Length: 220
Ligand SMILES: [Fe+2]
Image (tube, rainbow, N blue to C red; front, side, top):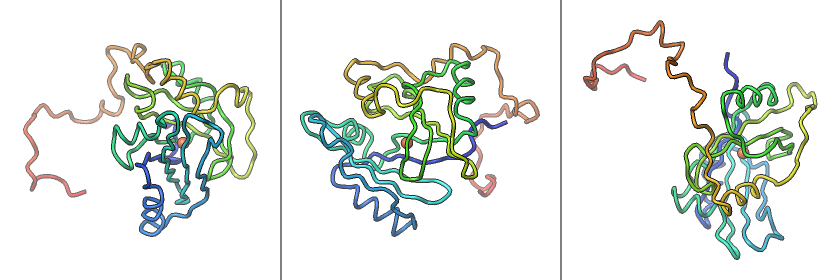
């Protein structure tokens, strides 16, 4: 059974001066609706900050982030410099029960970046938790997953996990960046060496590496 139910939102890091342009694209071309606009999420931070705009598509959301550089280059500027304008910083996946998912993930060796947060983002109330980067790299420029839980059928969420302890997420990435923490989401040490995907047991495996000719390909 799937443990994540859908894409909740996609966060794109955009280049300097581009957040208005990409917001126009997502709103006027794709039909999204601006639900949150913060032009400086860390006004008192002398080092760096970011702009954060949320655009709702009802079944999922788009989050645009643009770095604000002060004494230091923002982690968001660093991400866009590395990967290009409008690059995917993270994708958030919805779960039925975040605590249950987290227990399961940890049992498989997943490394998370701090504890759960409870927030109200541009799409409503949520519990959220971030994974470490997919690959061993500077935390500011590596993409990562986020796992969330939204209230179901208007019922407010409860949790047994201590909330919002320690640093917020921007600070957690800054801390990893400053301390050179390049630890990854998963090192696969708990993956059995003989593992095969369950779905492949009934699926005919092709032994041919011959490329499929264009005219043989099944139309999408
Ligand atoms: Fe997110």
